[in-house]
Length: 427
Ligand code: LLP
Image 1 (cartoon, rainbow, N blue to C red):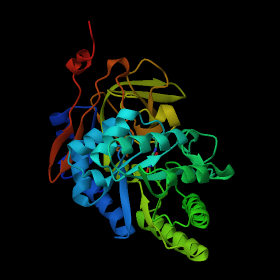
Image 2: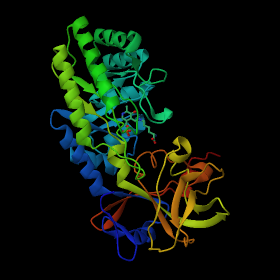
Image 3: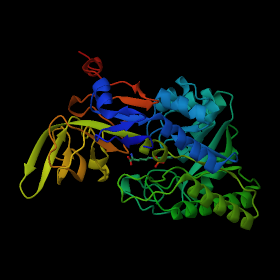
Image 4: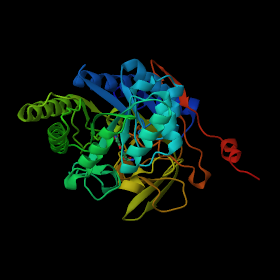
């Protein structure tokens, strides 16, 4: 995050506040999010894409009412993928027309709420959903703006579980074999739907613009086919999210302006070649906006050196606040942030307090050999898909999210309590 600095005595500060003070005030484990950094990243995406394009923040990465308000203030739109995210968005005042509703199996109640609220677009993901959304819109006397999500057949170079444009997976309708074209045919026939565009999301944590460019090219060729068959030029295309961030110093992510320039160039060129009007482009970054803005602060509890192997450092959280290492073999870095140390580096594995050996936060890292219980360590770049995927495994209490800004921290999602857990038990 951009406002993190280390003072001469080795203490790390964020947004002008020392992490030791944050730990005293808010406890550990906790996520600390740099609000200025979040807003700056929103602006960078807005500026990169300009007034002829729309940026939808992907709420699945991390969503709370405060985040919705920041997005609104910074001029971003919002992609939601469940009734719960929709409720948070509307409750915090995001105008419905700036919301896109996603999901491969939205239920009737969710669809009805979204259509009744007047969301700007519903992204259709199956033949069944085309009919469902049309019926619900008819019943409500509305015409719902929709996009059709297609799979373009790109193998994104990322973890299998987060790659989404190859054909053998649950999302979207395949361009190959004509499913996508058939979906367009059906959607265009239904009065309850206004088909405004085609959507593609190729995956997540991607560093190379090539996959996005192939996707853009294939989506534009579908637009040309639609024009040839139906005589309509769809006005919008959405190229999804997926831009990768740096988790460790080995990662070399692209900046928003690089992806914007690449996409604009390819869409303009392909449309000119097909004699199509250039559609309005939208994108849906989640991780690239919120990921780098937050870190998780943990307190070291136990230290277990295994001779000739490595030292296990147990912290007061774990897979319940960051499942990404266990689930995707994700790589993180870690730093001692409560003091300086001149001690030799030792090879560590940072682990949590959960009842399984896969409960790893940072698989391989170095920390000073004089590390001691009570030291504070920070894992950077945990703003995306950590709090949003947090669980209560072992009845862990999900940590708070604290926004740090102008020398003060403010809780935007409070720490869970044991009463919160007990409240769900019946009997
Ligand atoms: N749009 C759609 C339709 C998506 O499915 C996603 C992410 C995004 C946008 C945002 O992608 P981003 O810019 O954040 O990469 N839990 C996984 C990531 C799952 C992403 C799911 N879809 C992880 O922790 O890496």
